[in-house]
Amino acid sequence: MLTDSFLSRLDTLSLAMRGRAQGGAGGSRRSRQTGSSAEFSDYREYVPGDDIRRLDWNAYARFDKLFLKLFMEEQESLVTVLLDASASMAAKWASARSAAEAVGYLALTGGDRLNIQVLKNGRALRSPQLSGRAAFPRLTGFLDTCAPDGNEGTLTEAVKHTEGLKKGLCFLITDGYTEDALKEALDYLRYLKQETAVVQVLSGEELRPDYAGAVRLTDSESGEKLDLLADRAALDAYRDALTDFLKSVRENCASREAPYMLLDSEKSFEESFIPLLSQSRMI
Image (cartoon, rainbow, N blue to C red):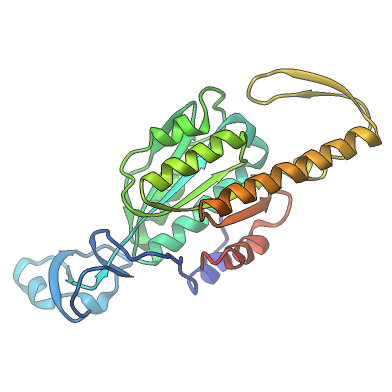
């Protein structure tokens, strides 16, 4: 659960998009439609957290309901968070969930619609579409029902089972295993016209293994066991492989114009996540 002080810091920030919004009316992002922001377009019902300066009091007097004035140039965008819930995410679930909550909060307070989809077993579990600051407890409530335990299907299969992805901003939160699945997932999201950012979450044990002597490792998804001698040569070989893996993930993201963030689950999330967003130019 994110602290109130961290949420207050997020209140001063907004998500960045390269393109212009093409979602429903009533948001704060610039659309491709012509006309000025003072040019009236439509109404929609008020949602707690909306800008009260847009309320139409004449409509309230007539219908006894709050309506928001919408204008041609300003539209809301759809922000989608795809959260990997495969079994390999268990050790870093708290950080991955916090990242989903933080991005979701930025979307809701920024006037965008939010869609959370949890990926496991080759499928996508979708939240209701959320809008407005007051929907944040519904976001956290949905995530309370989710846990990482999927060990069937691939990330690509799960992404291809997502629903309702219209052109907009997408955050893919995953450990990045395996590389081919990540590349295929990013290609599919590009096909769906998503501006995708990748948050790769790895544990301290994965980034800085501290084993000694004979150890038995168990694959969290397949259950396969590996016995090895964790001597200096083995640890050096692992670090070299990790360096190559992370380089490959960064290159795959860069070649697909996907901002990349590496989140270390051992570090304080609230101290590290905003700098990561800033460095990747996502805020």
